[in-house]
Image (tube, rainbow, N blue to C red; front, side, top):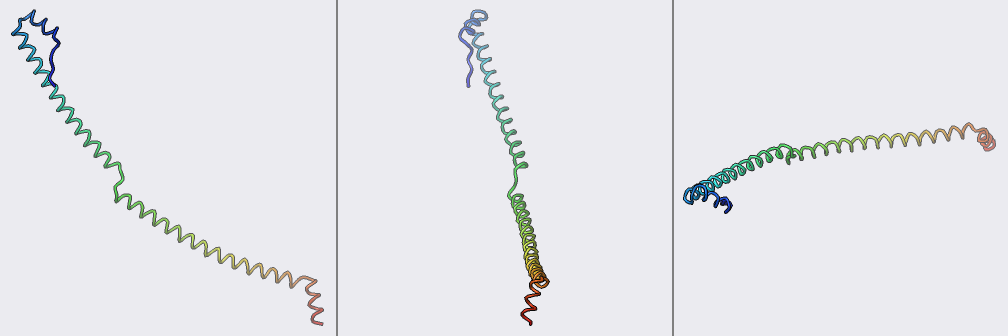
Length: 128
């Protein structure tokens, strides 16, 4: 982008130093401003690239990689399998306890029936 100085400023310079000197001074100032702008753009572009690289590296270090995610998934699957095995063990224990409870209830009913005085009287009548 090319810079030009305002017309009023140029006319003031012409009055003070003459037309030829004013044109040389204005050309020098305009070239100087162009050079400053070019250098600024180069510096901005360089800083932009540096920031991109830094951001990329930080994000790369922060984000989970595919291998990390897969490893985590495998760990979770292993834990799920362990929990399933524990659940199966608990189910087997519950089945055993259910069977034992049924047997105990049967024995209790048999014992209560056997030692019931009315049952004993019934047996005595049947046997006689």
